[in-house]
Amino acid sequence: MILLLLGPPGAGKGTQCERLMLEYKLVQLSTGDMLRAEVKSGSELGKKAKAIMGTGKLIPDEVVIEMISDAIDLQKDANGIILDGFPRTKSQASSLDDMLLSKGLYMNHVIQLDVDDNKILKRLSGRFACANCGAGYHDIYNKPINEEKCDKCGSTSFSRRSDDKLEVVQERLKEYQAQTLPILPFYRQKGVLQLIDGSKSVEEVYEQITNIIG
Ligand code: AMP
Image (cartoon, rainbow, N blue to C red; front, side):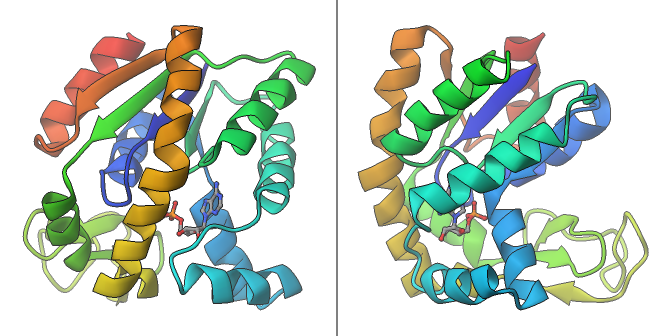
């Protein structure tokens, strides 16, 4: 199964992916995570990506398209794949379509998590993650049980994304509206698009997703 989660930054795609991966044994492919790994490694690509990501703008299409194609090839034995953060432009969506076809795959579901901008700003300003295993948390909505330690791996080290700063988030939202929203008609026309209310609780959103994917 190929499942695509779409939605503005902070819509909860990563949180939902964590559960879907566990319960449906799916693999998450997140271009944002891949790019952050490049930045961390200090590679040439990472250096270029860091400068762009710091402004909230998008990385050039050809870079992320190649990245995702290679990543899909590595998942031949997976039960299914959740795409998170890709495609994000019309050109990425149509390249993905050709790419899947050439690999004998197709998109099963595209789920759009709708959340209004005010809620996004509140969510992003409080989010942080375990620096060791990447588990996501929030200062108000989703604290670790023991505030000092990650629930999943016990690490005491946490980090915050530098692009969750207010001015960068505003730019990321603008990019989402200008570049990503226009891909919805593409998937609507294919009959695979479902819209859900992403402002509900993590549990309720998860239920809406599982009702769709079965
Ligand atoms: P994310 O973690 O998905 O919010 O992505 C963080 C940043 O990585 C974005 O603001 C972009 O700069 C970059 N990025 C991630 N995925 C893509 C993509 N599919 N196309 C272009 N840029 C991307």
